[in-house]
Length: 459
Image (cartoon, rainbow, N blue to C red):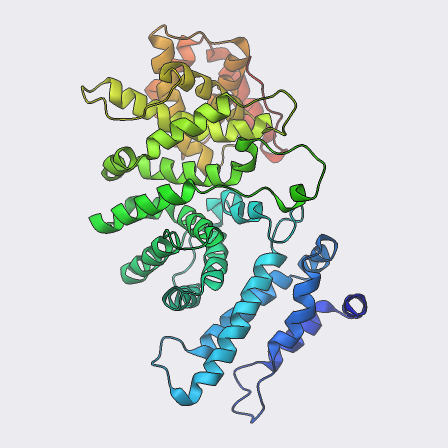
């Protein structure tokens, strides 16, 4: 029967079918004396079929995830959950919110990566691939979803709360009035509480990732900073279940770093953003965040490549190293220039570890176009690479020179990057890269329209 449903949807224009369902639940129904249509009746076959990857592509081609999110918004607005509950309208409100929850979950599943089965925890971390270039949303665009979040936070519906926060994690940074932002931060913090299911807690961390720079710059109360810091630390430490496919597959298990890639990347990008605001320094140190970053780095460095597990690709390892290098090199420099030894503690030699991360970071950055995220890290790499090389602590290999040259050329071609020109020039001269960088600047500008280059492996 389900196959017949799919066939009928393929034979007809799916978008028209879905829009017909949406119009049947329009806000004019009551005025026209029409009874509400049970939208869930439409969702039941779709919710089953969407679990199969082969059908998910069909639905995505017809923008099912967008339509479902729009329907969720309409149902939330009809529920009018900000108004005092009217006993007479309670049933209507319940039905609207029930349809809203169903629609939102359908949107989440429909928008998941096709490589993952529905329910795979790796689908949570799509937030790390949402570029900040898609801009701040107008404050009114998603306030309805904030209403939904606050309502289900208060009613302790953890599944709905997690779905809503996951949806917000892919929206990007929002710009709302202060009172709404405070309500949002409180909801994120509550979602990462110790008595909340792990998936909802991880959704809260993903939502925090989307507004990480705003959290760093906003004037939060000390209690909110403490609560967010502690909730973030405990959530980032939650174990990651094996992917759904691995539980029934004969494939080699993922290594620890590979299994937790999305979670760790989300976490260290949040930490990097907070570290740029000095008011967060004491929380990052005292609550164990920097020590945890050092542990992630040590695990990455010691990853067993014996062939008994599936390990991270060089590209993914470099992506982690990019942020870990900036975080740990800055902290290492800070702790060595003060008498206070409270900072990161790791079983590995910190100086040696930082240099390995810096090399991997340059290799990764050289393989990418310098989007805004990478642009924020490269000036810090320049600073700490210069410190290591000037001190005679480390030697630079030819492959690292090639990577540094390519990145510096790209950096100089972007006028908006806030880099210290003196440090960039000094590093260029110190490594004897002047002519090479000049040539690569022209080549970089010419190649802007081409796809990403291959990663340069540093020996």
